[in-house]
Image 1 (cartoon, rainbow, N blue to C red):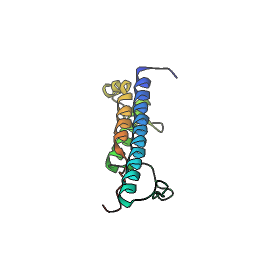
Image 2 (cartoon, rainbow, N blue to C red):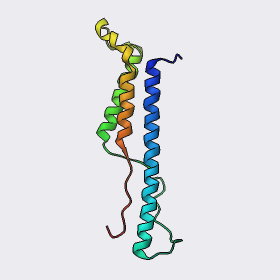
Image 3 (spheres, rainbow, N blue to C red):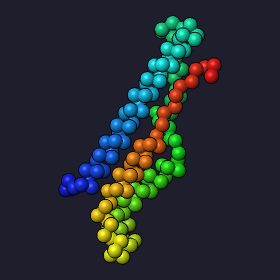
Length: 131
């Protein structure tokens, strides 16, 4: 596999996605620490008091909009079809030579889809018991 501009752009968008997930994970841990401090102040609990735990199997991230998740996935699939010269499962989707010129820019929709997915993720802020 050659290292081209397209591959570099897609790798950069994937790095952005994973950095965003790391930032969200750090923000979640910070929120949990703040929540623990507020809860201990409000309820007068000792430092060793147990905190509520998320139910097992609950995902660490939430989704802002499932519509944008679907759009991001479809845009990435369109970019992958462009990468394969407008061929899907051996069937030529577009045969117009004018449109086939744009297949060299396959990396733009793939990177755009990854960035859309990065902004679809969210974390929920913990709430105090009395809120």
